[in-house]
Structures are given as C-alpha cells and as structure tokens.
Length: 168
Image 1: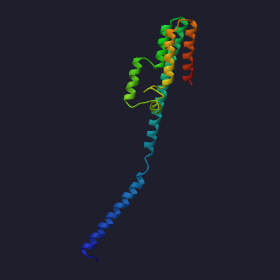
Image 2 (image 1 turned 90 degrees about the vertical axis):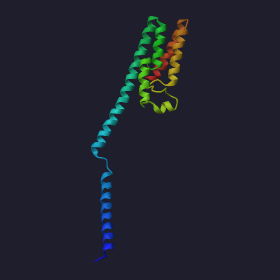
Image 3 (image 1 turned 60 degrees about the vertical axis):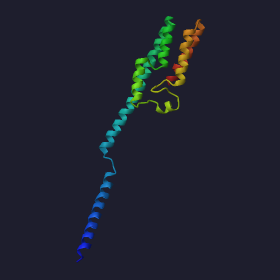
Image 4 (image 1 turned 30 degrees about the vertical axis):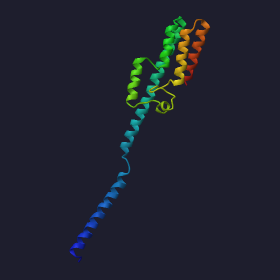
C-alpha cells in the first residue's frame, strides 16, 4: 500500500486525467456545429441575399418609372418636368427615398460597401454610380438650358445613354 500522501496524489492525478479525457472528448464532439443550426443559418443567408435582390429590383423599377416619366414629358414638350424626372433618376429617387436610404446606411446596410469605399457609388445607392449620376444630372441641366430642339434632343440622348448603360 502507498503512503497516505502518495495515494491522495495518485487519486488526484487519476481524477485530473479523467477530467481531461472527458473534456478532450467533449471538445471532439463539440467541434461540429449541429446540422440544424447550419441549415437555419443557411436559410437566413438566403433570406438576406434575397432581400438585397429585392432592393435592387425595387430601385430598378423606380428608375424605370422616372425614365418613362421623363420620356412622356419630353413627348409632351414639358422639358422642365422631363429634366426633373431625369434628376430623380440620377438621385435614385426623391428626398423621401433618400431618407429611407440614409436610414439603411445608418443601420449598417450598404448595398455596395466596396463600391462606396472605392468612390464608385454614393452611400446607399444601389444602381446609379457616381459617374452615371453626374452624367444624368448634366443631361438634366442641359435640357433645362436648351433653347433649340437640337439641344434638347442632344441632352435627351445623353440621358438615354446613361440610363441604357445602367440597365445591364
């Protein structure tokens, strides 16, 4: 028999080894995320990505509406309103839409975070790039300043080229 002291030390060593074996086995078992959690997270990712696509479709529909509005005003000879529709197109909507976009950005949602960081998009913009925005606003201003039908048609064609480039 071992002296009392050595027996306690051995007992403690055995206890510690048993705990370490159980802990190690537990880690081995817990290194895999439960399948149901992975499936739930995967479904959540699908939903998040689907919402991003919905946002893009919404903005594209809004742009289409502004483009058609501008076209209708051009045909009617109301160049001031046509220019206003072009400006709304360039800005991806009016101030009310801008407020929603601001709220999304402040909440951490950036449709094109990388593009914003590179200066390609204004914060929160979904379809219209900074360059396209500048070009469309220039077309709007040119339409307002136009004195002849040729100048108006040139301004309109500038806008159409921008709008067409964004419809890809």
